[in-house]
Length: 195
Image 1: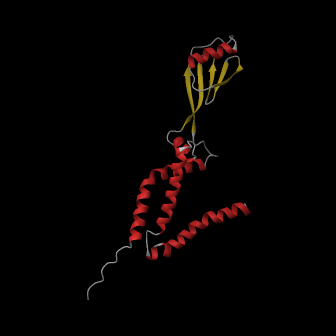
Image 2 (image 1 turned 135 degrees about the vertical axis):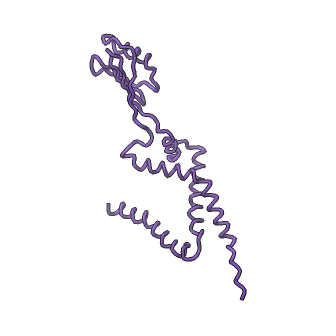
Image 3 (image 1 turned 90 degrees about the horizontal axis):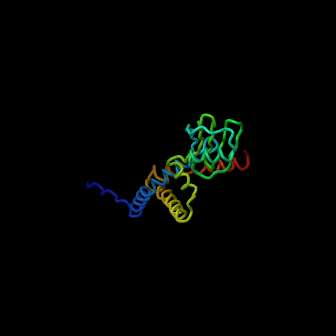
């Protein structure tokens, strides 16, 4: 008795697997960026995912506390060379001058010239990921993000049909797909009507 020849995969299955593989390779970097950014932004109540608070000590020449505030501000600014847009200045007491900028504040101890700088700085890499995730650039990035969304749809649908048999979509896959679909549906209903 001659053994049965091995069944060849149907052409649409080969195309499906190749499409899933290649679209997956093309989108892996965007998927990682969106996933990392999503985790960061989900916990915005606990931390600022875009900016980190930074404190640093600086030193300038001591300033004459008897000078008018406007003179103190100009002199301190000339020595500090602060970045950003100046907002306001305030003297909480005779020995201190506070300078406020859009992303930093400077507390100057006039007699000693010691300065405490408190600033916010963009988090490296994560800031860029968050801006792309939230579509801050607009224009061309909107089209790229839309293509990425379509690619995710392709990955989802082609992934359903990679395997066949009891481990494929009509076997275990159907139960797992149903369980995965139930999570957002049940949560939405609970949140909308019971929470």
